[in-house]
Structures are given as structure tokens and as C-alpha cells.
Image (cartoon, rainbow, N blue to C red):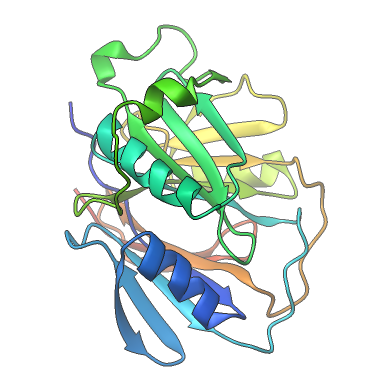
Length: 251
């Protein structure tokens, strides 16, 4: 079963434009459409857009703090995940972690300004574990890398698969994502975290692992994201982190 695509774009504010472009354009292979101070990046397949707003005067977001934990790019195959991992590791990008979540295999990195980036591939739904939707177990990185002998950029089919946020309150997160947006809570077993979804997928995670520390106004990091709404709503809201949520009609 193929799940409907729900995330279509994500916006970040950055201080160092050249470093951001070197990472997302030159290393990951996204194409760029400049409209200074905004830059739109996307894979060849146009499955999502990453908007970068360049503001060299923006105060750096302290980490950890309320805001982005990571955004996750979904790759179509295990081989493509291995190719991109090889490319990042050969460029000495720090690998923060590698995990088997049952439903997926995931690698965790950070971009030049500290924004969390997950690269992952989904297992077929028929191979998902019974019981809780996800778990976290060690991933055999050597075995994963053996799937590809050469490095490569993000494939054209790459999608923006899900988003995970640091929030100040789990209750506020549930009231917004479940109450206002109508997502179901898909997982409650992670301490200090909840996962939400339309369609039974792992679309959005929220955790309180950063406490209530907030970034200064106008700081770097997550500005907003666009969700394709299954009920066809078109509106703009503010999520519990202060990011702008744009709902557009989905399917």
C-alpha cells in the first residue's frame, strides 16, 4: 500500500547561505531556484520543496530548544539510502545515529546550522511489526552500506516523509495535531513523545526532550511547513512551536 503524500514543503531560516547551498545543493543534489533572499530547492521529481530564507543577521537558534527536532526525507529504496549515506560520510558529515524503527531504517545527520535531518526508507507495510507502530533498535550500518558500492545524491523520487518537533508541552501538541488538525495518535509508548498521523502513517512526532527552552525571535531554524489536508481545508495556522502550518487540499 502506498500512503498519500502529505508534506509538500518546509521552510528554514539560515544565516550562512553558502554553507546551506553547499550542503543541500552540492552534496545532496537538490536543484535550486533563487529568488533572493529566498531559495527554493527540490529533487528532480519535484516531490517536495525546501525553502531557505537567508538572513545573515538572524540569531542562532540554541540547541536543544522548542522547534525542529528533525525533518525526514523518504528515499525509495534501501540502495539509494546507502548511496546517499556513503556520499555524506565521504564528505565527513557527522552521523548522529542509525536506527531500525521496524517500519523503516533511518540515518540521522545535521545540516551546517544544526537542523536535524533524517534520511530513511520505509519497509513494505506487510513487513511492519505487530503491536506498537514503531520501536528503536540498532541498525547495522555496515550491512546497509553494502547495498551500494558507490556514493550518490538524493534520487529524483525523494519525498518529504515526516517531521519531528521539540515542543514545550505534549498536551498542547495533542490538542493541536489531534484536536485541530484531526490526526490520530499512532504511538504513545515513547517516553516524552507522541506520534500523529493521517492515513495510519508516521507523519509527525512531537517530544518534550528539549524542555521549554525557546529560541529568540527571528532565530534560525524552522519557519513553517505545508500539509496536504485529507478533508480539503485551505488555511494557515500556528503550531505549538510557533511555526506556520499551511493546509492545502490533499487526497
